[in-house]
Image (cartoon, rainbow, N blue to C red; front, top):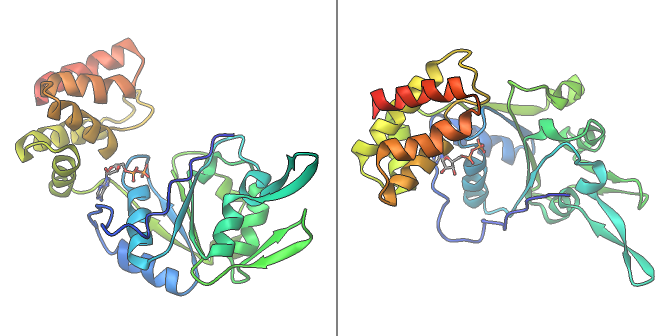
Length: 269
Ligand code: ADP
């Protein structure tokens, strides 16, 4: 089981760098105070995770992040009995820990999780704020400060389609897209540590790739890949070398498509 649980950031003094692109911070904080669950919709690499990290910091809550994958089961989320010597011992999963501690629980890319996981999410996501632990025969009430946040890419098949309407209606949805070019230039320059003029070129290339429709790409050029290219530039590579390695390479394995991307790189950089 691969589970990524980043250390809570709430206690660190510096706020994770996040540039708001609209009223998402205000809406998140209002939903948090009202005990509502939050859905973040948007493509991979557009800042959803960083946003949650910044919100956890501002709200002073620990953050427990779970990167969902297709083998993720309910037991992975809530916990299981494990063998300890010749005895079995219950070990809380990340969702249960968040419910007990009053943490923000971020289920990243919930689409990947198995269908049966939605069953435990229902009573947590709606007004009940309860987590039934069947194996222990108890139902936990979420501690104050607990907040369920899930992200998904609406372009994919979604397990969320199976959430009951009554539950979905109690979730607040925030739509994420890529930031405007000016904002994205600032983000790429800051995160990669490169000159604004270099960031501007990378962002212009990214925008052009995003405009390609049906270009045979699995994903578009996200802010994340532009930052990766910027990091290579900060190491002394040329913009062209960096974009070929960090933008064109990861986006496609198809020689024809890669060739097209490399031509775009030559034009834009
Ligand atoms: P997602 O969770 O949507 O896949 P991330 O939050 O991991 O994406 O974003 C990828 C990277 O892009 C982040 O590590 C961060 O460096 C950068 N990023 C994207 N949007 C922003 C933003 N609005 N403010 C600051 N950094 C951002």
